[in-house]
Length: 208
Image (cartoon, rainbow, N blue to C red; front, top):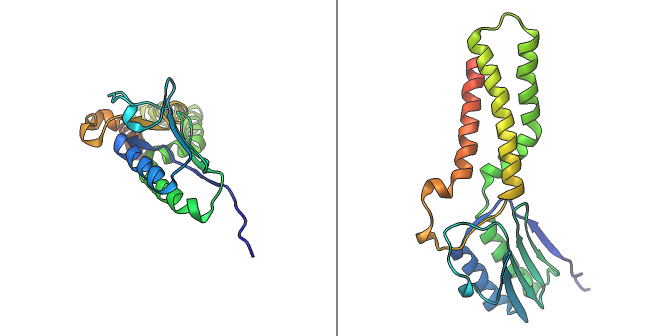
C-alpha cells in the first residue's frame, strides 16, 4: 500500500505580518525544507533572502515567497492570501504545517468577519430603514435621524469592507515588531470597523 501524494492549500484570512514573522518562516524553509531554490518577490524586486530587503515604515500589500524542489508558494496579495504546496509528503508536511500555524496566528479575524457580514447585511441595513421612513408616518424626529444614520453607516461599512478586502487584504510591515509603528497606525483598519459597529449598535438601540 502506498499513500497518494496530494497538493496542500490553505486560504489565509487577512493576515498582518512583520519581518520577525517572515524570518520565522524563512528559518523553517532553510533548515527543514532545504529547497533547491528559494526566493522572495515584491512588486518591484526579487530577493534571495530576507536580509536583502531594506526596512521601510509604510506597509506593503504584495509579497510572494517561493521554493522549488519542493515547490511551495506563499502568496500575500492586496486582495487574497494563500499558502500552497505541490505535495503533502511526509518530508514536507511538517514544515508546511509549522509555516501555516505562524501565518494563521497573524490573521485579522475581526476585519475578515466584518467583511463577510457586510456582504450579506449592509444591503438590508441600508434598505430597511429607508422603507420604514417612507411607509410610517408616526415616526419621531429622533427615530428618523437614527434610521437615516443606520442607512448611511451601512453604506460606509460596505464601502470600507470592500476597500479593505480588495486593496488591504494582506498587510506586511518590513520592520521588526519592536520598531513597529504606533498603535493607531498599526490598527487603523480594525479601529474604523470597530467604530462603525459600535455606532450601529448605539443607533439600533436608540431606534428600537
